[in-house]
Image (cartoon, rainbow, N blue to C red; front, side, top):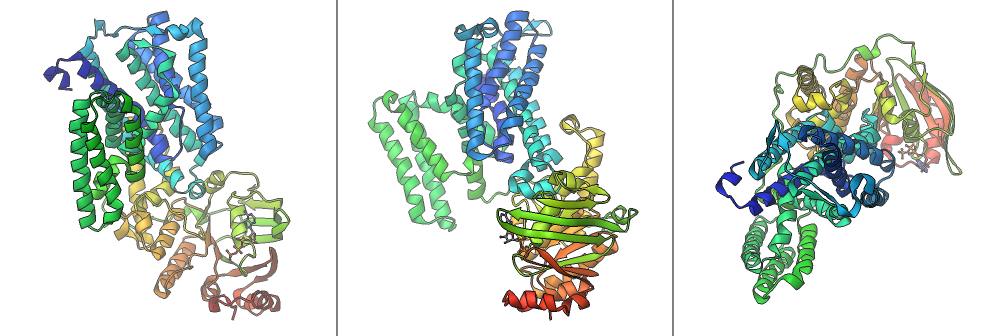
Amino acid sequence: MLFPIGINNPYYIHLLETIMIYAILLFGLDIVVGYTGQVSLGHAGLFGIGAYTAGVLVFKLGAPLMVSLLAAVGVTAIFGAILALPALRVTGPYLAMVTLAFGTIIQILINEMSFITEGPMGIKLQKPPLFGHKLDEREFFWLVAVLLVVSLVIVHRVLRSHLGRAFEALRGSPVASDCMGVSVYRYKVYAFVISAGFAGMAGSLYAYSEQYISPNSYNFELTVLFLLAVIMGGRKSRIGSLIGAAIIVLLPKLLDDVVLFRYVSVALAVMVLISAAVAVKRQKATPAAMAIPVVGSIALAGLAFWLDTMTDWRLSIFGVIMLFVVYYLQDGIVGFVRNALNLRRPKPQLDVSVEGASTAEAVSKAAGAGGSDQVLEAAGVLMQFGGLKALNNVDLVVRRGTIHGLIGPNGSGKSTMMNVLTGIYVPTAGSLSFGGRSLVGRTSSDIALSGIARTFQNVQLFGEMTALQNVQVGLHHTFASNFFDVAVHTPRYRRESASAVNRALSLLKFVGLEALAEEEARNLPYGKQRLLEIARALALDPQLLLLDEPAAGLTAPDIKELIAIIRKIRDHGITVILIEHHMDVVMSMCDTVSVLDFGQKIAEGEPAKVQADEKVIEAYLGGQETDAHAQPA
Ligand SMILES: Nc1ncnc2c1ncn2[C@@H]1O[C@H](COP(=O)(O)OP(=O)(O)OP(=O)(O)O)[C@@H](O)[C@H]1O
C-alpha cells in the first residue's frame, strides 16, 4: 500500500501491480492445483475471458468498474463450470489436454469474434472511474491492493472451511472422500468454478492495468508460467502464490539486465551454499545430493560475469532455473524454507479444548432408532470381473443392532462385497436394499449420506491432514453453509464450524486419539490410523458401519482396545459388518457370521455353529491357509 508513496516511478508501480494481479489468479489456481491436485492448462484462457468481459463491457456499453468487475467474475466462473463439468470426468494427462484445448479455443474465439472483441486489433481502455472519481495510476494500484487483500481473506477462509477440507480430502484419497459423503466430482467442479472466479477478477484488473487487451496475451506460455508460479512458490500456500507471482513477473525483467542479474545470481549462489551446508549438517541431505545445486548455482553466477549481454541466453537460463526448481524444490520455495527451518504448517486455532470434549454425545444414538428389524438385505448378488465371479449369487440379511461377521479365505470376495455395498462397484446382477431403498446404481457419496460408513482394508486416510481434520471431513454433511457463509463468516457458519470441531474432538476421544488431534494422519502409528478411520466413519452418523479387517497389523493390546470400541459402537445402536481374519475377534464379538468361499456363501449362523461347519473347515484348510489366526478352531 505504501509503495507508490515512497516510489514515484510508474514503471515499478505497474510491476508491483502486475504481481498483485497475478497473485489473485494464483490464489485461485492453487485451490485447483495445490489442494485438489488437478492440472489446469486453461487458466490463461480464463484470465483472458475475465479481461475481455471487462474490456468489452467498458468498450461497448461504458460499464462502470463495479459492474465490469462483478460481470468478469461471474462470466469467468460460468466458463469455469462449462470447462469443468465435462473435463473433470477425466484425470491426469487427459485433463491436461482438455484444459489445454479450452485455452486454445478461447484464444482463437477472441481472435475471430471481432464483432464483440475487435479481433487482433485489441481493445483500448482507460483507468476506470470509481464513485464518479477517475482513478489515477496510484489510486488504481491501491484498488488492486485492496482486492488482493479481500481475495486473500476469502481464499484463506474457504480453504480453512469444510469446503477446503473437501478439496484436500479428494486429493488425499478420492475413494475415502466419496465414501465420507464428499462427492469427488462435485467438489472438483466447485474448486474449478471458485478458481475461475478469481481468474476472472484478475483478468479484469489486468485489462484496466494494461489499458489494452489483445488475444495474444492469453497464450499457452502464460498458462505454463501460471502453473510454474504455483509450483515454484509452493503449493497450498498463499505466501507461495505471492512469491510465485513475483518470480514470473520479475524473472524476465531480471534476465534483461545483466548487471542486476550478476548481483542476483551471486546472492542465489550464497543462499544455496548456506542452505546446502545447513541441510548436510542436519543430516537432511547427503553432500553428494547437494553437490549439483551448489555447483550449478555457482556456475550460473560465473556465467553471469562471463557474459556481456544476456539477450541470447535469456531463454536458456530461464529454462535451467525452471529445471532446477522442479528437481530440487518440489515443495516450492515456501516448502523448502519451512523444511530447512523446521517450521510446521500453521495450524488453525481451535476454539474448543480437547479436555472440554465429551464422548457422551460423540456417537449419534439416532442411528439405531426406529426402522425395520433388517438394516440390509442383499439377494442374488453377482459381481463379475471378466470371467471371474468375485461374488456369485450371494444373499445376505443383516439385522439391526448386531455385529455381523463376514469371513472367508483370501480372495473369497469379502472386500468386493464391501465395495458393492458402498457403491464403488455396481453389481452385475442382484438386488441390495438398505433401509427399504435400493443401493444399486447410486453413487458412493449418496450411499454414504444415506447412512453407510466404512473403513478400508488398506487404510485410506487423508495423509496431509491432521487427525482432527480427517474426522471433520466425516462431519462434512453437518454443514449447510455455502461459499458466501464461509467468505463472510456468517453466524450460521461459525456455529456449524464450532460444533464440528467439538464433535470431532469428542469422536477422537471416543477412540482414544484426543492427544493426537493435531498430528498429521500419515505420521500416526498404524494401529492409531485404523482407529482414526473408525472415528472418521462414525462422524457420518451411520446406521451401518462396515469394518474391513480393522485388526489387521495391530498388536495384541491394540486389538483389545479395538474390540472394546466396536462393542461400544454396537451399544450405541449402530449395526456393524465386520470382515476379519482374526478368528478370536470374530468369534468373541459377532452375533451372526456369514462365510464366503470363491464368491459363494457356504455357511451362516451363530459363531460356534459356523466354526464347527464341515464346509467352513474344508474351505480354510483346502485353501492351505497358514495363518494360525485364520483357522476356525
Ligand atoms: N476390480 C477388480 N478387478 C478384477 N478382479 C477383482 C477386482 N476386485 C476384486 N477382484 C477379484 O475378486 C476376488 C475377490 O477379491 P476380494 O478382494 O473381494 O477378496 P477378499 O475376500 O476380500 O480377500 P482378502 O481377504 O485377501 O482381502 C479376487 O480373486 C480378486 O482378485
